[in-house]
Image (tube, rainbow over all chains, first blue to last red; front, side):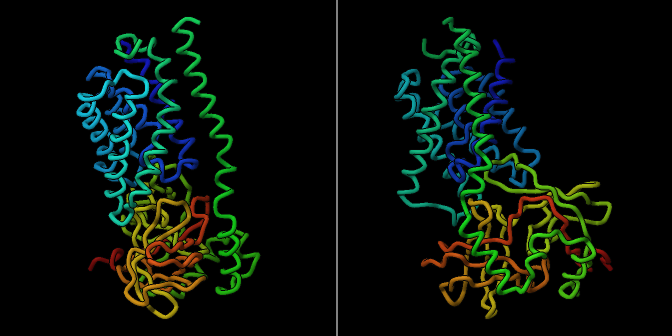
Length: 160
Length: 233
């Protein structure tokens, strides 16, 4: 299993997160490139790789922040749990249909993050629509790039 | 193209996109609040009576001490240098101070600059303290306005801005209303400048409040160390 390839991919997603945080603003709660990469890994990859990526991100983010550990870890756990549940009903291999798995997971994780930060930060239906749109744009931009990297992750079960 | 080559190309493209975003970052940062920043600067000049050169020039530590000394009857003032850092949690905002436990700094102490409230210390060690900036969404502070009407102010998801969590009376703001700390909680003394209302809205929690910013710049700051914390007896 090519675990070492995950390191540059994780570093790149963290770098993207840093670079796009000002552009995305509050949209980072649902469309953080780190979450999108983690969601892509969760879709069809092995447990061990999901654990390495999720654990790595959580450990990195738990230090050097004013956020609480729960605030850092919860979105990753929600994304993982929801993706594993929803993919039972939708094919995670189809290039577009898999977004039906990823988008609800990202939006729900963002909703929980927002409420953990402050209950007053909730938004109405228009906010959910905007969250979905931002998550769709970032996922649709990143997933094709990530799909191209699959030969490096030799054992991953990504669509051929 | 072979699959492996495509994979490396994809990583290269991703890296280039990220670098482009880093390059465009200054444009994004400067575009957002130009009008509000102008209003804020006008405001400070008119209402607080601070001279123009004082706004742009960095005050020395002694000047800072002189400025805040009249308000700090129950506090000891401690100077430090604040360095902004990128918080690892993308929507949170923090900074680092160059002093910490060696001078009895502890979580819960208030930090001010020459413009007003900067944030609160949330963690400290030897030679460093981490400050939660006032525009962090988790930052909460009681305030009063010029008529001593009280409320609760919180940071927001937008950099440099705050929002009202609660206000007892009246239930709306007037434009350019100034907000100050009310001294409750023992973190800041009363009447430290917090921010101004640049967009009053109904409901009141949607109003836009501009903090004395920008908060994420390197500067000299003062920490309000409660006298009780220094002498527990």
